[in-house]
Length: 558
Image: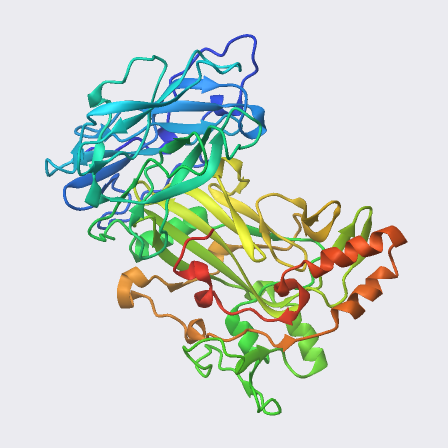
């Protein structure tokens, strides 16, 4: 069985860069800083080809020929480039072209397909011209034409074909997929449009993702793009799917260990951070209590593994955890214990089992108060932002075709963002660097200030390198990998469904008044309006639920 070229071998056929334009980021290919490790033996992980059932096999191609490029429009007004995959293993066929904005290093892939049944793939019967750049008056490499394959009855197109000729592509250029082996997809990120921003009523190019995503969803991302003449039009392409729910390409326990040792992130805390992480066991051993509604005067000490916590059910405000009662002990435990800290790993299939997500969860005994920036003034916000118990995470997305890191998700308060490997900072090989924000512990890929707000007014998220850091690879525990059955013993605290801190209400108006005293008159009303627009997680002191209760436990990140 032939293997596709991995990203570390990816190549774009060199085009001569004209003397009248500067080199673009996409003109260089991104490679991870270190070679991939040798994966321990297993069933299907890292073997290059994944069987999606009913005769459809797919592989990931990262070697391309550039077909056409534009040098204006799109992100940063640098244009985009369009490619067709090359160097297929024997028997594999193209499913669609690839596109990427020119403002990032080249780091792309698409799937190619092989039909072992004689009916999984078919040639298109025709092509429809979706769009051409012929009338476009911008810098471009000739004229580009984007075609939609017309599938035979019972089949669907999963990718476009791009040419530099008005002649239709050969019918044998690409393949369509049998309808029962496809799933619905939706637009993801903006790749290109003639303007500097996407125009909902104009032509745009977007990346695609399966519409249904999660641990049980079987839609598979093909890596192709969709060209739309209006955002309101239905997506003209499908994705493929894992028709037999085959998860044999997921890593086994030994492979999980090797994956995490290769990619375990470094987490840097701000030099002024007072509230550091700890392990859950340390928190329980050092005086955390379980409270029950109606019996608040008799809190219960928690066993080190959480075995006496109520299990299952739903969050109903009947139970919550809190810090030690003694004030001295409370202040000590608030600060956490970095030396006793540990990260907790949830290993889960994603995108039809073609990727492995490693969610890296970090626990903090306490989330500190927020700080605001009001134009040129920095202001502490009193109790606003404080709460007992804080769970944050980053997620590594690993290709099951070859074990390569393909993205990192950074949780940021109630949301977060995926970051491509080409935009990450690495340390000690292929380990991404993560920055935890001061007091709030939101995760970011770069140091500096991120302002949660607008118009010069917002919550400060300050990050910086310091001597306070965590090498997550040295203190980790796999707490869940449901696809492995009973191979992983989940700790009892993971099934605790209630809050990890008490709910405390306070007068927001009083907190605002304290801050108003520090502000010039014209900024008072703007600040008041901003604070009242903040989400509840910032405005009230309330502990979070644990990792297993989060939407992303069984779903995708964003």
